[in-house]
Length: 167
Image (cartoon, rainbow, N blue to C red; front, side, top):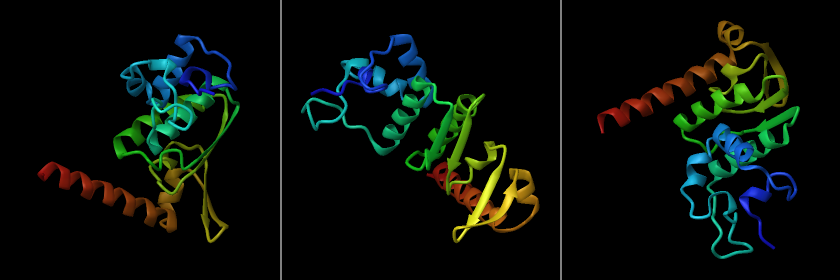
C-alpha cells in the first residue's frame, strides 16, 4: 500500500497537476514538494515504503491545509494550524488562510495571537469560560487579558528579531 502525495488528498482520487500545485502553493508546501525527486508522486511516510518522505510537523500542517483547499471545504476548523511554523512561515500561511476563508466559515483555535488579527471575531477564553468577544482592535482597546497576551507575544517576537539582527 502506497500513499503518494498526489492520491492522499481526497481518498485516493487523482488530482490534476494544476489543482494540486495551486493547493500546495497556497499552503506553503509547493517549494518543498518540487524539490523532491518524484515531486507529486512522492510517497509520504516510510511506514509503507522505506524511500518515502517524512514531513516535519509544520509541513504536515501545511499538507492538511492543502487538503482542505483541494476538498473545497465550506467549513474549516484550524486547531493550532501554525503552531509548528516559524514566524515568517506563519505570516505567509496567515495571508493564504485569509484568502482561503473567503466565502467559507473558518474557526481558528490558537494560542499564537498573531493569527487572531486576521479574524472577523475573536472569542477569548480563560479557564474554559468566554471572557470577551470582539475584533482584535476592540480587545486591544479593552486592555484586558487579550491585550496582555498579545503585547507579550509581540514583544517576544521583537526581542527574538533583535537577537537575530545582532548575531
